[in-house]
Amino acid sequence: MLTPNLTVSDEGHLLFGGADCVALAQQHGTPLYVMDETTVRENCRGFRSVLQEEYGGNGMICFASKALSCKELYRIVHSEGLGTDVVSGGELFTALAAGMPASDIVMHGNSKTDAELQMAVDSNVGRIVADNLPEMTRLNRIAADAGKTVRILLRIKPGIDAHTHSFIQTGQIDSKFGFALETGEALEAVKAAAACPNLELVGLHCHIGSQILETEPFAEAARVMLGLMNTVRQETGIVLTELNLGGGPGIRYVERDDPKPFGDIVRAMLEAIRKTCAALSYPEPFMLFEPGRSIVGAAGITLYTVMAKKQIPGIRTYVLIDGGMCDNPRYALYESEYEALIANRADAPRTETVTIGGKCCESGDLIGKDMLLQEAQAGDTLAVLATGAYNYSMSSNYNRNPRPEMVMVKNGAVRTVVRRETYEDICRCDL
Ligand SMILES: *Cc1c(COP(=O)(O)O)cnc(C)c1O
Image 1 (cartoon, rainbow, N blue to C red):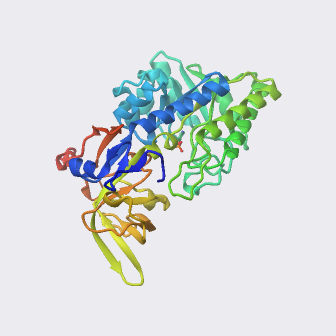
Image 2: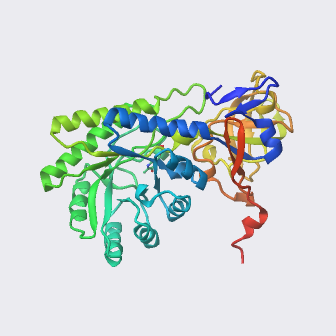
């Protein structure tokens, strides 16, 4: 099985987090997002323990909301001692509504509106990551009007090529995010921030990309960013005390993926920080990390019902399901790969090569091409694995399909954490 939280019962049913997936589909309907609370908690603890062991706990792990934002997830990560990063007013609203302390929230975004900045200032979020100069000017004015000084970090493009899909590579110079290091723009931004009376510049931030399988790009990012902090000290006398290295550790989507464990990645970054600090006589900064996918990705699967099988002789076989790009747009966006299983015959060998097609009116609405699967029949329950990140959070009402329910399982016990949308929900804003 792809991940340890997947097992097979004596009846041949797929079990996820101890819950029978066939029973889940029958009782809750499909499509159904299933999250395993135990895996989420273990991953949170894994990140925190590396920070503790390698760095005396001098830092904070902030779950990246964009991977999966719903109230229950914030409650779980908060109870594990994590903060969160948010990238919009909507994520901020949800995190606050779930009881996440504002001081544990980092506000991101390359195009924050005045309303979002106002919300961040009014709710006293712990840190705002400034992306560009006009935003900094607006934030300074909003903070001044509120009679506050807000703590900021600057988003930097460190120029790291993280060898990932170009759509999700964000650390290089041709990126819409942040200030470039090579051009001197970053240093100018530091000076501009220091000149804003209602902004307290405490550090720098970078995020070099996502689904990165190696440790070295992360260690390199750590060295480059600390080098910039040292340049800032030399050029301006400002000693920045915080460094946020973003997220990005990859997970296993298909059997042949071999990602470095996130513990190795965080350890490599912290080692690079400690060594570079020692070499430059720079005080060790408070470290922030923002993992998203590596916390929730393998903690989720999606269950569908097989509606039909279409065999096109000599071409391909389609297995058609009752969901698709409306609940998982990642194949349509990035040609992302997944593993799938027939949950009611999970112990049977996978002998057929099929393309899983969704129900939306787009030829590109696929979950994956040429996937190995058990002989599928209409009525089967199909499980698509490792869908915990960037599925629910990227879902839409395309074709006016209601968003699926999400259940949380924990050692076999099941509870609904996001109810299924109704047609009334879909029409609720229509006048
Ligand atoms: C996307 C993103 C993350 C999370 O990335 P993962 O690959 O899911 O870990 C963290 N921080 C920022 C700023 C991001 O844009």
